Length: 184
Image 1: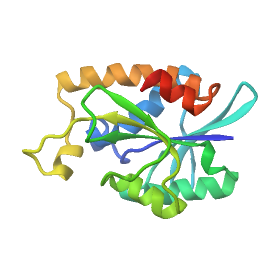
Image 2: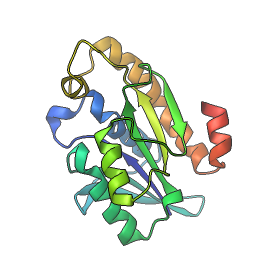
Image 3: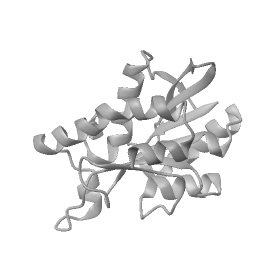
Image 4: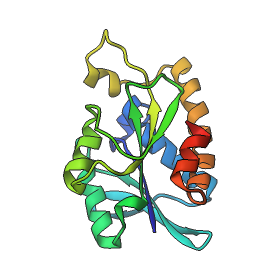
């Protein structure tokens, strides 16, 4: 069973913010696989479906970003998901807007959602797709990540979001090394 998690903050006021790129990606993946992320369990909106005989869970934690690891921990325990079968999709300040990178493991890089995941899973060795949102050094980081994309930024983010379902389809069929070679 694979758990694919998009990080974000719950609530309509956060819909088009930089920190909600993970939610945007999960929505696009759900559309691609023709499923709806609307079941609620353990403070998370999720759906389950099968792809090539394997069970897949798409999850949008409904606790705020800095507590999302608690939700993921509860799903991992309940569904008995191996750490190697977790993929986190999140925003990344250190990657240029409209770019992305796949990683096996690594530090949180100051990302509060990733910090909380590491705390609750007791590891930083989980797969991730980091979607670039750039960084405006003229703004406080919290204000920046919680700020809305302008129309130009949204154009570039949507180009990445459109690619994510293809990456996920490959993720479900290829070894992660091959995936990183193909997309990084």
